[in-house]
Image 1: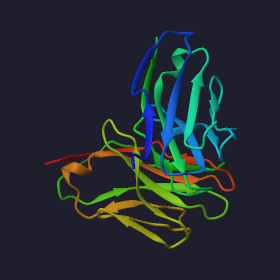
Image 2: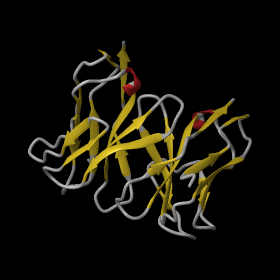
Image 3: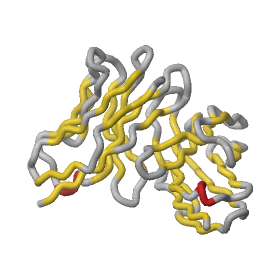
Length: 112
Length: 112
């Protein structure tokens, strides 16, 4: 039982490049989330999903897109990376609404 | 609006000292409250939680009591260890939404 896994662990992009971050969970959770963590700001919600085929915006959705084609996977895309998107990205999942969220190990992204 | 406020760090203690990390929140209603811990280079792990007023969450020697009168959820531990060095996040759900609101985090450093 791996819990929540994220790939890649670290990535360097140039401004304007695109990439996709993958999150996978093996707990059969309905809800999945993407957060970004910046110094002194805690974690901020980018997008979330309440089930397969659904997505919704969080606090800071601009510049990101997501997809939840399979229940166990939640993808975060950056179409045209900007230096302001340099951050650590965490994926999380939960069984249902307002239940405990379980986090992945994070992806560190540097945009030059 | 809804928010979570934590005491600023870093908090530096000697081993076996008493720890308090303050957390207060603003909310309508009585959301579930959480403490998460993040060890260096890792994702967030749930430390403890409380789902209703006057509940006490506890785990690994840490405790926090949900106090609706003071809208607080302070984290305490009677005797800290070097291995407790980490960043601690207080969090709550935004009522009626699938959004976990985090405080900015408090870094704890414990020295032998």
